[in-house]
Amino acid sequence: MDNNKISLIIPHSDSERVLSELLSNIKLWTLYPNEIFLIDSSKSKLKISEDFSKFCDDNNITLKITFGVDLFPGAARNIGVLSTENNILAFLDVSTFPPNEWLRSGLEILKEQESEGVWGYTYYQAETHTEKIIRASSYGKKSIRTLPGSIFHKDVFLKCGLFIESVRGGEDGDWMSRVNLHRLNISTPKERIIYRGLSNPSYFSIIKKWHRNYLSASILPSMKAHKDLYFYVITAFIVIAAFNWNWIMSNWDPRSVFYIPNVTKISVASILIIYFCYRGIFLPLKKGESLKFLFPINFFIIFCLSWILDMDKIFAFSQAKINQWIK
Image (cartoon, rainbow, N blue to C red; front, side):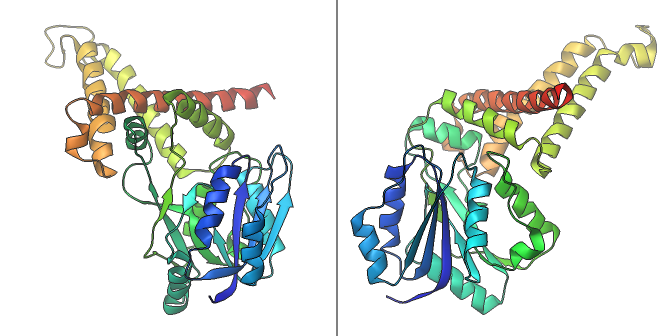
């Protein structure tokens, strides 16, 4: 089995069983990296099986484990980026499982297209009904562009900088937006990776995770967060205007052509119906869900969870703003 001068960087924290599955998966690849960086911030010290250590020795793979305390993903990845002398860096997370051709295919694209990197594209695996509802309310069934699964030339980080280290989540999206801002030549992959992190979650755990991550990531210049904020501000403006329509346009005169009976009820109902259809039907369809899955009842469950997650996001942003004022 051949390998190239590629560093594979994997952050890890208290997921030893899943990490073991990922390391076993690496053995099946058609191309190996010559260096694997595991950046571990687990409560208990990470132990690598003798079997995988022997595999690395037999295939001339240097396995490096760096231990840190309470490292967020961005900080862990930065350690890997700064520690390697290789010019090609590949990124995976513990719950992301690539196909056997992933690394070879990505490297071929880098060479053939002379690009600066290859994006990761991730399919979020869902088996149970709860997992599928959570996926439809968040990531969607279509594969989406992600940092895990990406392969870059190291000089990309000289142009775009490193990952922000002080946030629990969202640092990957922030860094990817900087890549887009610099208009770098990043290719689309042929292979997608599988995310298995939705396995056996509860609705409460997802809501809790959503709040934690958005509270932490509120300081990032995320375009998605801005768009969400604009949506809610515009909605609030429409509701306020609706409450005052008859006063603004007709001075509450029922004889005026602009006077609308029950304007508040009509306006609020219209906004709720639009939001309901968008979150419960249109957006899941856009993200790859089928009408068969949505109807007759799942679209309503998806809407309810989506609404809770949206409110959770607003609360997280508001809480972060209040915390800034207090400080």
